[in-house]
Amino acid sequence: MKNDQRPEPLDELDERLRDARQSQNRRAGLDKPEERLARRQAFRLAGRAGVEIVAGFGFGAAVGWLLDEWLGTWPWLLLLFILLGTAAGMMNTLRVVWKPITGEDLPHWARGGHLSKLGDPDAAREKAKEADEGKK
Amino acid sequence: MASSPLEQFVVNPIVEIQAGSADLSFTNSSLFMAITVGVVTLLMLLGMRHRALIPGRLQSVAELSYGFISDMIRDNVGPRGRVYFPFVFTMFMFLLFGNLLGMIPYSFTFTSHIVVTFILALVVFIGVTVIGFAANGPKFLKLFIPEGAPVFLLPLLIVIEVISYFVRPISLSLRLFANMMAGHTMLKVFGGFVLVLGAAGVLPILITVALTGLEVVVAILQAYVFTILSCLYLNDAFHPGH
Image (cartoon, rainbow over all chains, first blue to last red; front, side, top):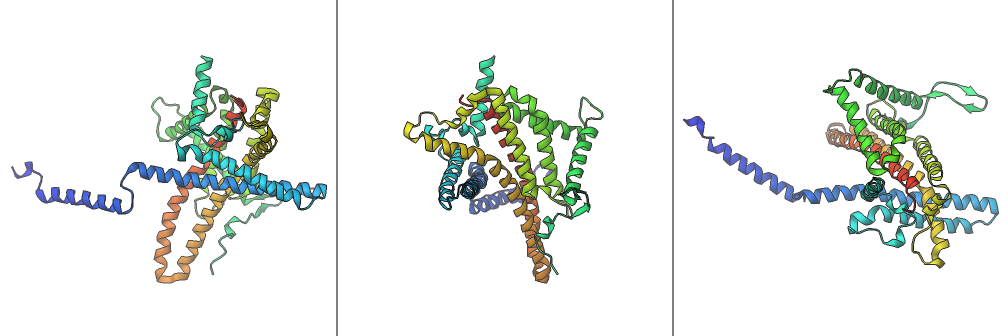
């Protein structure tokens, strides 16, 4: 007969454990799974976006430097291409982070000639699906 | 005492080969590339040996990785991308196992060298450009013309679009290389602390354990990111100005 019922102390322990976990999660700011997901996505985005600007800057500087060497216009093309390269890097960054942050599609001026779909797997997927259906 | 945290990235020749002025030595980097290729080949061959209807463990690994890349191409490139499955799959497995084998102590991580990742990114970049022109002809250049932009801004925007196209292989390779190198350096630095701190070295050990876990995640994630971005670039080659 005794075995039919779960001993009460354990029930209580369960409850206490649950409470403790919840308060711990709350303290760590992890109470909502969607928040956790958003944070993880933000980290990934930050990692990807930062690289884009650095790469744009570096590429612009290298191209400017080489053109200067070639044309003897030091340092003007270097300066110009650093600006252009950084702009291109920012453009790529914008394309990566726009949709996840604003939840909206890219504004048309940032869309480029569809380089925009880069960094946005969802859009690419939808587009691929449309193309598939179009063929059928 | 503790060696430099960057020492792990030194490339040493194992068999020296000189062809004219070119240094074609077989290095520790080449050795680990060869090991990676061997491991991947073995995994796939052994995994598919039985061709069982109900897959065993090894066969599951092989089938799952096949399905993963196959789905990735179908979702991101569409049916025309199927032809490039062998290339994408090979690249993904090479990077994944290169990254993961690099996590084994005393091994060498060849993906932590920008030469390696840049050449891989360059192969993708040149390949995508060639495929783009082959599939669309001169219409591929539409990729660089933003739609609906005011005419007086077009010259500037086209220059920026062209640059942002050429930046792609750089950011692609930089991301993988920087992640791998930074992670491995950090592991070595914290490993070095353990010796220096004596009894208090327990703390850096704990951090190193946590970092090792993080690095395994990074190794898998970066192989995935490199591959999916290649797929997205390939998608551009097929659908410019869609």
